[in-house]
Image (tube, rainbow, N blue to C red; front, side, top):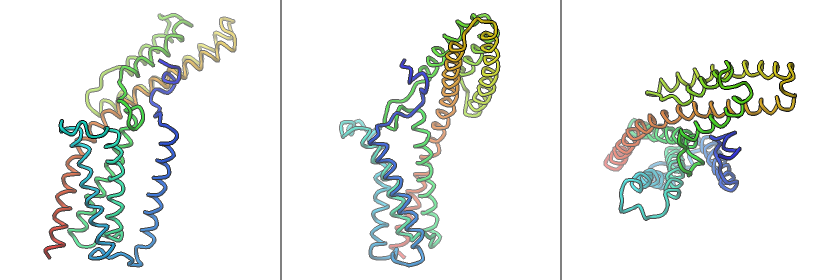
Length: 286
């Protein structure tokens, strides 16, 4: 494992071009949202006709296009149609542009009861999608990369601990503390709340590691067993160990949260489809 992966194994590695596009797209979305909110009282757009009506059709169509990504994953006949990276990116873009178009269609207001219900459901789905994206990048290598494995986290912890154990011996209290902290980071979590509990215990163990090893290194320098430069190098090794342990604990929590998010996101999406269809039916019939 490379030194970079050991030091920051959870870091999202994304090309500079993709980061720039993400920043520009985010800035554009925020700017359009602020513009629409600022101009909402000027009645430039009317939901019943003209550009306002067209934006409703466009927004609804973009929200329907969100189905392409899960269909691409589950229907074998579609597996050869472009890459998953393309479909995921399209899913994210439609999930942002669709709600934006519908907000402009609604002139950033709730309107009638059926309109308000459909709009709120859509905003819940959009917000859920942003939460899912936030969790996704924390358990994958980059937004479109392969999923991280817990074994990689544990390997980083073990590698970072090796150099420290040689300083004091594997039977010393300081080395035993490292082993206990490592076991916490590697232990199996049974459910989301147990994951949070293990993360809290890991944080406490990490703080104890810092305090104990600070004293160990100071004593070693004072007794002449280590020079100052070697102690500083050992302290950097401890920092890498702590970062790897914290990454393993955070990965466990994010993985459980992402699994729970999946359970919630689908019903929200179905509810949005139902309320959207009812809204279109009511508007055009009555």
